Image 1: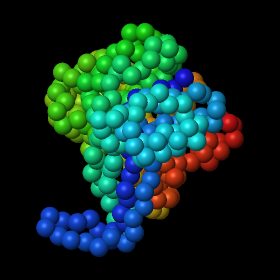
Image 2: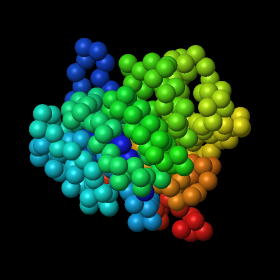
Image 3: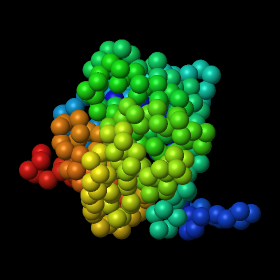
Image 4: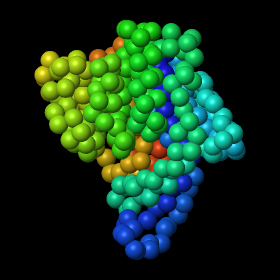
Length: 303
Protein backbone atom coordinates (compact mmCIF):
# COMPACT_ATOMS: atom_id res chain seq x y z
CA UNK A 1 0.00 0.00 0.00
CA UNK A 2 1.13 3.53 -0.84
CA UNK A 3 -0.16 6.02 1.74
CA UNK A 4 -0.07 9.75 1.05
CA UNK A 5 -0.33 12.04 4.09
CA UNK A 6 -0.98 15.60 3.01
CA UNK A 7 -3.08 18.45 1.73
CA UNK A 8 -6.29 18.61 -0.30
CA UNK A 9 -7.24 21.87 -2.03
CA UNK A 10 -9.47 23.33 -4.68
CA UNK A 11 -7.42 25.44 -7.12
CA UNK A 12 -8.63 28.68 -8.68
CA UNK A 13 -6.46 29.15 -11.78
CA UNK A 14 -6.09 32.46 -13.65
CA UNK A 15 -4.19 32.88 -16.93
CA UNK A 16 -2.30 36.17 -17.47
CA UNK A 17 0.28 37.45 -19.94
CA UNK A 18 2.74 38.31 -17.15
CA UNK A 19 2.82 38.12 -13.35
CA UNK A 20 1.65 41.19 -11.45
CA UNK A 21 4.24 43.42 -9.77
CA UNK A 22 3.74 45.26 -6.48
CA UNK A 23 1.19 48.05 -6.94
CA UNK A 24 0.29 46.84 -10.44
CA UNK A 25 -3.02 45.56 -11.85
CA UNK A 26 -3.13 43.02 -14.66
CA UNK A 27 -6.10 41.70 -16.59
CA UNK A 28 -6.63 37.94 -16.51
CA UNK A 29 -7.49 36.08 -19.67
CA UNK A 30 -9.59 33.26 -18.15
CA UNK A 31 -10.24 31.48 -14.87
CA UNK A 32 -10.87 27.81 -14.06
CA UNK A 33 -11.52 25.69 -10.97
CA UNK A 34 -9.55 22.46 -10.54
CA UNK A 35 -8.87 19.82 -7.90
CA UNK A 36 -5.49 20.32 -6.22
CA UNK A 37 -3.42 20.34 -3.04
CA UNK A 38 0.02 18.78 -3.08
CA UNK A 39 -1.11 15.66 -1.24
CA UNK A 40 -4.16 15.11 -3.43
CA UNK A 41 -2.19 15.85 -6.59
CA UNK A 42 0.51 13.36 -5.68
CA UNK A 43 -1.93 10.62 -4.73
CA UNK A 44 -3.85 11.03 -8.01
CA UNK A 45 -0.59 10.95 -9.99
CA UNK A 46 0.37 7.77 -8.14
CA UNK A 47 -3.00 6.16 -8.84
CA UNK A 48 -2.79 6.98 -12.57
CA UNK A 49 0.61 5.30 -12.86
CA UNK A 50 -0.12 2.42 -10.47
CA UNK A 51 -3.20 1.46 -12.51
CA UNK A 52 -4.52 -0.90 -9.79
CA UNK A 53 -1.14 -2.63 -9.28
CA UNK A 54 -0.79 -0.97 -5.84
CA UNK A 55 -3.44 0.09 -3.34
CA UNK A 56 -3.34 3.90 -3.08
CA UNK A 57 -4.66 5.66 0.03
CA UNK A 58 -5.00 9.34 0.98
CA UNK A 59 -4.98 10.65 4.56
CA UNK A 60 -6.07 14.29 4.77
CA UNK A 61 -8.64 16.86 5.95
CA UNK A 62 -11.29 18.85 4.10
CA UNK A 63 -14.04 21.18 5.25
CA UNK A 64 -17.58 19.92 5.80
CA UNK A 65 -18.63 21.88 2.73
CA UNK A 66 -19.45 21.35 -0.93
CA UNK A 67 -15.85 21.81 -2.04
CA UNK A 68 -14.71 19.15 0.42
CA UNK A 69 -17.36 16.69 -0.71
CA UNK A 70 -16.36 17.29 -4.34
CA UNK A 71 -12.68 16.77 -3.49
CA UNK A 72 -13.37 13.39 -1.84
CA UNK A 73 -15.55 12.29 -4.75
CA UNK A 74 -12.70 13.20 -7.11
CA UNK A 75 -10.26 11.03 -5.16
CA UNK A 76 -12.59 8.02 -5.31
CA UNK A 77 -13.19 8.55 -9.03
CA UNK A 78 -9.41 8.41 -9.54
CA UNK A 79 -9.12 5.07 -7.77
CA UNK A 80 -7.89 6.45 -4.46
CA UNK A 81 -9.12 5.13 -1.13
CA UNK A 82 -9.67 8.05 1.27
CA UNK A 83 -9.20 8.12 5.05
CA UNK A 84 -10.13 11.80 5.26
CA UNK A 85 -11.84 13.88 7.92
CA UNK A 86 -14.48 16.52 7.06
CA UNK A 87 -14.02 19.35 9.59
CA UNK A 88 -16.98 21.49 10.68
CA UNK A 89 -14.61 24.17 12.02
CA UNK A 90 -12.69 24.81 8.78
CA UNK A 91 -13.30 25.37 5.09
CA UNK A 92 -11.68 23.20 2.45
CA UNK A 93 -8.20 24.44 1.52
CA UNK A 94 -7.99 26.75 -1.48
CA UNK A 95 -5.13 27.79 -3.76
CA UNK A 96 -5.05 30.77 -6.11
CA UNK A 97 -2.76 30.00 -9.03
CA UNK A 98 -1.62 32.54 -11.62
CA UNK A 99 -0.08 31.19 -14.83
CA UNK A 100 1.82 33.41 -17.26
CA UNK A 101 2.15 32.96 -21.01
CA UNK A 102 5.34 30.85 -20.63
CA UNK A 103 3.51 28.30 -18.44
CA UNK A 104 5.24 29.30 -15.20
CA UNK A 105 3.08 29.69 -12.10
CA UNK A 106 2.78 31.68 -8.86
CA UNK A 107 0.67 30.16 -6.08
CA UNK A 108 -1.01 31.52 -2.93
CA UNK A 109 -2.51 28.91 -0.59
CA UNK A 110 -5.16 29.28 2.13
CA UNK A 111 -4.69 26.02 4.10
CA UNK A 112 -8.14 25.83 5.71
CA UNK A 113 -8.81 22.29 6.95
CA UNK A 114 -5.32 21.16 5.96
CA UNK A 115 -4.00 22.97 9.04
CA UNK A 116 -6.08 20.59 11.19
CA UNK A 117 -4.58 17.40 9.79
CA UNK A 118 -3.00 15.29 12.55
CA UNK A 119 -0.81 12.19 12.36
CA UNK A 120 -3.33 10.42 14.58
CA UNK A 121 -5.64 10.41 11.54
CA UNK A 122 -3.62 7.48 10.18
CA UNK A 123 -5.41 4.36 11.48
CA UNK A 124 -3.30 1.58 12.95
CA UNK A 125 -4.50 -0.78 10.21
CA UNK A 126 -3.26 1.65 7.55
CA UNK A 127 0.16 2.04 9.17
CA UNK A 128 0.46 -1.74 9.45
CA UNK A 129 -0.26 -2.14 5.73
CA UNK A 130 1.78 0.82 4.43
CA UNK A 131 4.83 -0.15 2.37
CA UNK A 132 5.50 3.39 1.08
CA UNK A 133 4.63 6.65 2.88
CA UNK A 134 4.71 9.91 0.92
CA UNK A 135 4.51 13.32 2.68
CA UNK A 136 4.89 16.97 1.62
CA UNK A 137 5.42 20.37 3.26
CA UNK A 138 1.91 21.79 2.77
CA UNK A 139 0.52 20.62 6.14
CA UNK A 140 1.82 21.27 9.67
CA UNK A 141 5.41 20.02 9.68
CA UNK A 142 5.18 18.71 13.23
CA UNK A 143 2.36 16.42 12.09
CA UNK A 144 4.39 15.26 9.11
CA UNK A 145 7.22 14.43 11.50
CA UNK A 146 4.83 12.49 13.72
CA UNK A 147 3.40 10.59 10.76
CA UNK A 148 6.89 9.63 9.61
CA UNK A 149 7.86 8.50 13.13
CA UNK A 150 4.67 6.45 13.61
CA UNK A 151 5.04 4.57 10.33
CA UNK A 152 8.77 4.01 10.83
CA UNK A 153 8.20 2.65 14.34
CA UNK A 154 5.58 0.16 13.16
CA UNK A 155 7.01 -0.69 9.73
CA UNK A 156 10.81 -0.58 9.88
CA UNK A 157 10.97 -1.90 6.31
CA UNK A 158 8.63 0.76 4.85
CA UNK A 159 9.99 3.25 2.31
CA UNK A 160 9.43 6.80 3.55
CA UNK A 161 9.52 9.67 1.06
CA UNK A 162 9.27 13.36 1.97
CA UNK A 163 8.80 16.05 -0.66
CA UNK A 164 9.80 19.18 1.24
CA UNK A 165 7.63 21.49 -0.84
CA UNK A 166 7.10 24.10 0.28
CA UNK A 167 9.87 24.33 2.88
CA UNK A 168 7.96 25.29 6.09
CA UNK A 169 8.86 28.83 7.13
CA UNK A 170 8.91 27.97 10.84
CA UNK A 171 10.92 24.76 10.52
CA UNK A 172 14.22 24.60 12.41
CA UNK A 173 17.27 22.53 11.56
CA UNK A 174 16.43 20.27 14.50
CA UNK A 175 12.86 19.75 13.24
CA UNK A 176 14.21 18.79 9.84
CA UNK A 177 16.81 16.35 11.11
CA UNK A 178 14.15 14.53 13.15
CA UNK A 179 12.51 13.65 9.83
CA UNK A 180 15.70 13.09 7.83
CA UNK A 181 16.82 10.43 10.33
CA UNK A 182 13.77 8.33 9.51
CA UNK A 183 13.29 8.77 5.77
CA UNK A 184 14.64 6.96 2.71
CA UNK A 185 14.16 9.56 -0.05
CA UNK A 186 14.05 13.36 0.15
CA UNK A 187 12.65 15.19 -2.88
CA UNK A 188 13.27 18.94 -3.35
CA UNK A 189 13.60 21.30 -6.28
CA UNK A 190 16.71 23.45 -6.71
CA UNK A 191 15.32 26.40 -4.75
CA UNK A 192 14.12 24.19 -1.89
CA UNK A 193 17.52 22.48 -1.77
CA UNK A 194 19.16 25.88 -1.28
CA UNK A 195 16.72 26.71 1.54
CA UNK A 196 17.40 23.41 3.32
CA UNK A 197 21.16 23.79 2.99
CA UNK A 198 20.96 27.35 4.35
CA UNK A 199 18.90 26.08 7.28
CA UNK A 200 21.21 23.18 8.14
CA UNK A 201 24.45 24.90 7.05
CA UNK A 202 25.40 21.62 5.36
CA UNK A 203 25.19 20.12 1.88
CA UNK A 204 22.26 17.76 1.36
CA UNK A 205 24.55 15.16 -0.16
CA UNK A 206 26.66 15.25 3.02
CA UNK A 207 23.63 14.87 5.30
CA UNK A 208 22.32 12.03 3.12
CA UNK A 209 25.59 10.12 3.49
CA UNK A 210 25.53 10.58 7.26
CA UNK A 211 21.86 9.62 7.74
CA UNK A 212 21.63 7.07 4.88
CA UNK A 213 18.93 8.59 2.69
CA UNK A 214 18.86 9.47 -1.00
CA UNK A 215 18.18 13.01 -2.19
CA UNK A 216 16.43 13.74 -5.48
CA UNK A 217 16.73 17.33 -6.71
CA UNK A 218 14.28 18.17 -9.49
CA UNK A 219 15.42 20.76 -12.04
CA UNK A 220 12.42 21.28 -14.31
CA UNK A 221 13.29 20.92 -17.98
CA UNK A 222 16.82 19.83 -17.01
CA UNK A 223 15.57 16.65 -15.33
CA UNK A 224 16.78 15.57 -11.89
CA UNK A 225 19.87 14.80 -9.82
CA UNK A 226 20.10 11.78 -7.52
CA UNK A 227 22.51 11.79 -4.58
CA UNK A 228 22.79 8.35 -3.00
CA UNK A 229 23.93 7.58 0.58
CA UNK A 230 27.28 6.25 -0.71
CA UNK A 231 28.17 9.66 -2.13
CA UNK A 232 27.34 8.95 -5.76
CA UNK A 233 25.52 11.45 -8.00
CA UNK A 234 23.55 10.70 -11.16
CA UNK A 235 21.81 12.99 -13.64
CA UNK A 236 18.47 11.91 -15.09
CA UNK A 237 17.19 13.71 -18.22
CA UNK A 238 13.72 15.08 -18.81
CA UNK A 239 11.56 15.03 -21.92
CA UNK A 240 11.79 18.06 -24.18
CA UNK A 241 8.34 19.67 -24.20
CA UNK A 242 6.70 23.05 -24.75
CA UNK A 243 5.01 23.77 -21.40
CA UNK A 244 1.44 25.02 -21.21
CA UNK A 245 1.10 24.88 -17.40
CA UNK A 246 3.78 23.70 -14.97
CA UNK A 247 1.46 23.71 -11.92
CA UNK A 248 1.26 19.95 -11.32
CA UNK A 249 4.60 18.85 -12.72
CA UNK A 250 6.41 18.49 -9.41
CA UNK A 251 3.51 16.65 -7.80
CA UNK A 252 3.25 14.35 -10.82
CA UNK A 253 6.95 13.57 -10.41
CA UNK A 254 6.56 12.72 -6.72
CA UNK A 255 3.44 10.59 -7.11
CA UNK A 256 4.92 8.67 -10.02
CA UNK A 257 8.19 8.07 -8.17
CA UNK A 258 6.37 6.79 -5.07
CA UNK A 259 4.09 4.49 -7.06
CA UNK A 260 6.96 2.88 -8.95
CA UNK A 261 9.07 2.45 -5.82
CA UNK A 262 6.06 0.72 -4.25
CA UNK A 263 6.17 -1.78 -7.13
CA UNK A 264 9.82 -2.55 -6.42
CA UNK A 265 11.40 -0.52 -9.23
CA UNK A 266 14.88 0.89 -8.54
CA UNK A 267 15.24 4.52 -7.50
CA UNK A 268 17.14 5.48 -10.66
CA UNK A 269 14.58 3.96 -13.01
CA UNK A 270 11.70 5.36 -10.97
CA UNK A 271 13.23 8.85 -11.23
CA UNK A 272 13.64 8.38 -14.99
CA UNK A 273 9.92 7.70 -15.42
CA UNK A 274 8.99 10.39 -12.89
CA UNK A 275 10.87 12.95 -15.01
CA UNK A 276 8.97 11.74 -18.05
CA UNK A 277 5.64 11.97 -16.23
CA UNK A 278 6.40 15.48 -14.95
CA UNK A 279 7.22 16.67 -18.45
CA UNK A 280 4.01 15.20 -19.87
CA UNK A 281 2.00 16.92 -17.13
CA UNK A 282 3.08 20.32 -18.43
CA UNK A 283 1.07 19.82 -21.62
CA UNK A 284 -2.35 20.84 -20.26
CA UNK A 285 -3.88 23.41 -17.89
CA UNK A 286 -4.62 22.15 -14.38
CA UNK A 287 -2.66 19.91 -12.03
CA UNK A 288 -4.61 16.65 -11.91
CA UNK A 289 -6.27 17.09 -15.30
CA UNK A 290 -2.86 16.90 -17.00
CA UNK A 291 -1.44 13.90 -15.14
CA UNK A 292 -0.49 11.06 -17.52
CA UNK A 293 -1.58 7.43 -17.44
CA UNK A 294 0.69 4.44 -16.93
CA UNK A 295 0.65 3.68 -20.65
CA UNK A 296 1.88 7.21 -21.45
CA UNK A 297 4.70 7.10 -18.89
CA UNK A 298 6.22 3.62 -19.00
CA UNK A 299 7.98 1.75 -21.78
CA UNK A 300 6.30 -1.47 -22.95
CA UNK A 301 9.10 -3.51 -21.37
CA UNK A 302 8.24 -2.10 -17.95
CA UNK A 303 4.49 -2.52 -18.28
